[in-house]
Image 1 (cartoon, rainbow, N blue to C red):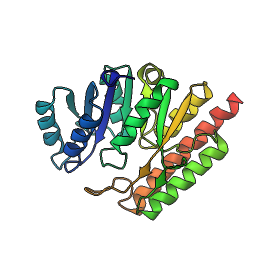
Image 2 (image 1 turned 180 degrees about the vertical axis):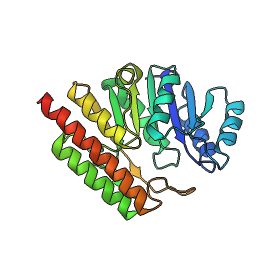
Image 3 (image 1 turned 60 degrees about the vertical axis):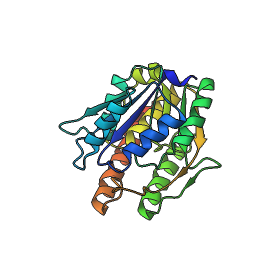
Length: 239
């Protein structure tokens, strides 16, 4: 796949310390046709940093959600605004290495979607937050038992896919549960999904949105559970 056919979506919330070096890295490695920064009304100056990047690079486009939309809706907005044949989205905190995206690009020609996986051989979950790792392990183990065992990272959120496919299956959910829904529904309809291993690291700069306190853990865990239950009903009918 040629890089000119690729749109990279960066959903951001308070990533002022990360957005500039991340965009520089993506452009130096991949130089995609466009980078769409969808900022969820950050209060730390992320929007301003993103606009400076758009002045420096004509391939960088910035949208600020006011009011905020949440993660899944921000990614969907980027998909809707993108103009390339392929779309990718990655976290803006460097937990998803741009170098891995380059490997995913080389793999997409033989499938419909590539996801980054820390659970696949060669990958590793190196995040320091124990509760985050525990929640991730429990959710992914449950999904593998209930749905498709060949998929190892149902909560990846590190995705490269043909835009035509994703147009037919808009994202559902508020946070990371959208990824479970997408992977189950595409797998059920026979789309070919491959995984690329990577080492998932804790953010170095900025504050985590996944693990600030126990309330957030509970809320996100409940969202995953509700999605899994609803998908199991759908999956059972497909059998």
